[in-house]
Length: 454
Image 1: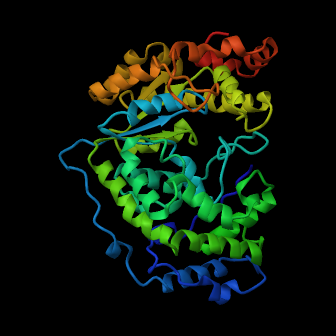
Image 2: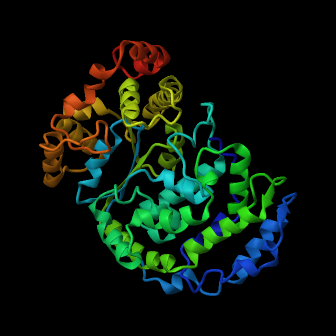
Image 3: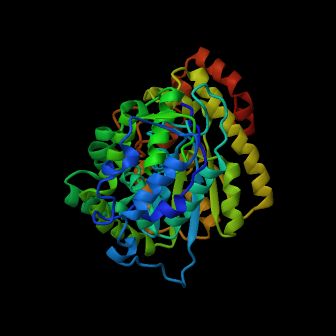
């Protein structure tokens, strides 16, 4: 899937519109003359400006005037910001438990994926933001990275009410940790649905065409993106592209569903609970797959206390695990290996450079070390962060690495294992000789750079 990004205009202006309560949002964009045409020829930004003006003209109440004040963190506390850069089926959920189970931490499981839903209105597959459908490298644009940096800072500052609604309706929230329970309970009470079902059931599946949510062709995606950009008042990515009336109306209905319905007002009430939980914890951590390690340097430059954990796993183990749950996004293991190992090798080289430049800000870990020596690896990570390991976390780690419970499906997104060491290395017993020879060849450089044995 190839995403063609244009200039993201009006993001700062429209940021406060993301979470507008019902009374604040556009009453009926359908009546605007800008929408009552069969198609739009986008030869300049005029149409986008018309839509933007229409939205702002109908916004009569300040967002801040209708919400309770956010609890700010204690100014005497040292806020620790942590970003774990990981790989799909690379032990990332296991690593995340070291934060999610810490009663002094606030953790978000995979925060960048829902940012792409907010940016583009598209459900995406692993690595599709960094690579095209053919596996070619795709640089994230400056606008994409700026959006990511901006919303990471909102998370770390506990300004969760300023996040796009789409971000906090994702299934990444309930996977994050118990600190999100008050928010999820509130949302379920107010909407009568589980949080991660609200957006998809009530808005996305109802209004956005399936072609916009799957692995569609470039032309279809351009139509989806242009329509979403126009409704939000942003300059469309491809100005010359025709946007059908049907597509524009579908995206307009999707926008209304998010912002002009009880969902929006329920979100405004409930997200405050998450912000309060966040503000009481000085350790704030996120897990990220959809970034390159080199792009984390900006975060460290702007905050000398920022911490980045780069977790590796033998790419052969990650690929075999992904295939066992039918999660090879490119179908064939060879095609997936080229993408995964290329990104991992890039990140390993970036780590060497960044670790030398910022020795106190970067730490590299391995899933195998976490599985083989969980408590020693836990202490190594927390020493790097300058934090004590809570007793509750030590106990939780022992429970999940020596569990009586084992998930039914091999490779499931579950961290409970009877024997974590056996789980981490089981792929060597499952892989065929032909697949091992193939992966040894395709991923040779990555295997060597990562310090793994053939």
